[in-house]
Amino acid sequence: MATTDRRNVLLGLGLSAATFACKIPGLRAGERSPNSEPGKLTLGLVADVHQDVIQDAHERLRMFIDQMKQDKPDAIIQLGDFAIPISNNQPFLDTWNSFDGPKYHVLGNHDTDGGYRKQQTMEWWGMPERYYSFDKHGFHIVVLDGNDSNPEPWEGYPRYIDAEQQDWLAQDIEGTGLPTLVICHQSLEAERGVDNRDQIRKILEAANAKAGHSKVFACLSGHHHIDYQKRSKASSISRSIACLIIGWEVHTSTRGSVLMLKRHFLTSNLPVPIAIHCSPP
Image (cartoon, rainbow, N blue to C red):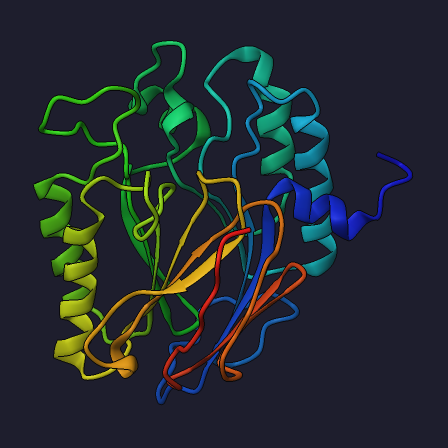
């Protein structure tokens, strides 16, 4: 590890320092990191560290946290498949908690391996709810739980968002006037993502149609172990949603200068319509 370029290692971990910038009238002040600017939000993202199956997962997380302590983002978010709630994983969790700033969790399908319940994992992480939302620096961030039980006969891990959570999602987005970022461990666009992803995207696209612009401007996920970007299909480009998967290798092609992934930095300027086309490696 010592001879490997630090930035490449960070990419190999599946992380991104994401910056979302938008000029919005009447932004609420809120707390700001030392590097924060008005109307700008910087998030440190890490996905699929897999403490319980990857030998050097703790070292990878430590490198991420060390970098975030230098970069000082407004918050860090782990996108799932993090660690199960066992005492041997306490040093790993302590490393995560050593970041002196807001920290948020997303439940992954492997975070209940070994027969653990969601509530056990959440309590150990310090995650109050399995799905939730919060506002930060003029942005609304929604975290979903893509691990509900599938209503149809299903093999393998559940990857579904049930009716109760769908109703909550629609009401939550309706209740905000801020540009909204939606986060789920499993993709809301890719195959083998959330099984009823079409239903979820309809909720997001309906919110954009009602607002008349890309109120929900992007969805972020992990799970698939690739870096991938795609604009969701919509009747109007001005209401489209960029779907991004945080993973390992970066393969990017863009049209326009609206959304760019450059190494581990992601920049989106709003309310300019998102227009990006990307193919998986």
